[in-house]
Length: 188
Length: 147
Image (cartoon, rainbow over all chains, first blue to last red; front, side, top):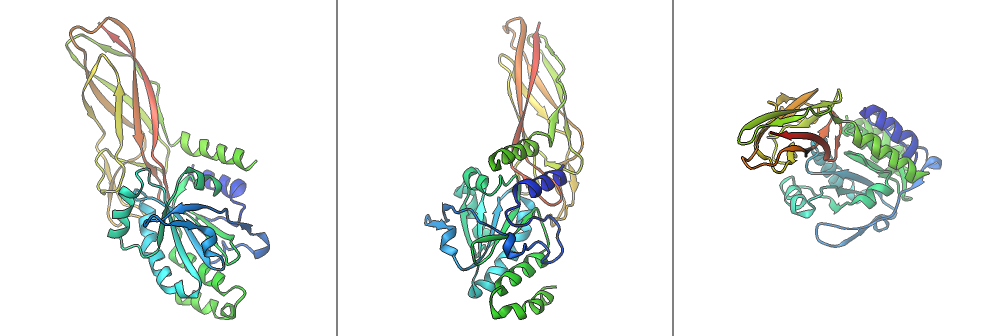
C-alpha cells in the first residue's frame, strides 16, 4: 500500500516540485520552470523563536518532516547534520519540522542526544496540510534559492541523492554549476 | 481540489494498515474470568511496534477497553518478532502479518444480566522498510453477555 499511497500523493498532491521514494541521484530535481512556490509558515523553533520560511530567502533549504518515533528519520539526521556543516556557508540550511504530538518535551532531549546541529521547529497539522498532508515520515522538500520546491522525497532515500540535489541547486545560477558534477562524484 | 485530494490521501493512508476482524460475542459468567480474542490484519510489507518496543523512542502498541461492568484482568499481546530493517541498526521488536490479542475479563458477582457493549481501542504505529506513519487507533466493538 505504501507504494500506491506514494504514487497517489506524487501524482495528485505533490506536483509542487517532483517526488520520489527511490530516485536516481539528482533525478528528482524538477526543471526550474516546473517548480511551485513552497508554502509559507511561521512556527516556533527549539528556542521559542519564530521561524518563517521567508527567513531563508535566497538559500537552498532542506525542509524535513520527521518525528522521534520514526526509525527511517533517525538514519537521515547525521546526513543532514553533515550537509548543514558542509554547505551552510554556501547558502544552504536544513530545517527539521518535528511532528511529535508530545511536542518539545520529547523533541528537545532527542535533538540534544542526537547532536542535531540544524534548526528544528515544531510542526502541526496545519503545516503538514499545506505541504500536501505529509502522511508518512520522513518526508523532505528541497527548496531552491527562489523559494520553490525543487524535489520531494517521501520515505528514506540515499544520502547520495540528497547530496547531489543540494549541490545541483546550490550551483544553479552561480559559477558553482560547473563544479557541481565533481561534488556529486565526491559524495559517492 | 488540493484539499479534497489531501483528504482522500489521508483516508487511504490511515484506514487500512491495520484492520480488525469482526469480533466474536463475549460470554462471561459472574465472578469468573473469561478470555476473549481480537484478531487483526496488518497489510503485507508493514510492521507495527510491539507492546514492548526495543527502542526507547518507539511508540508501543496499546489496547484499552471500555467494558464496564467488566474489569480487565490482563491483556496478552503476541510475542514480537525481532526484525532488521533498512533503517534499523539492530533488530527491532515488531509484529507483522495477522495477529491476535487476548484479553482476560472478570465479571463482578453483582454484574447486571443481559447484553452490553464493550469497546476496544488498539493504538498502533506502523512503518514499512522506508517510511513510518503517525500513530493510529482502531476501534472494535464487542457484544457482551453476562450470565
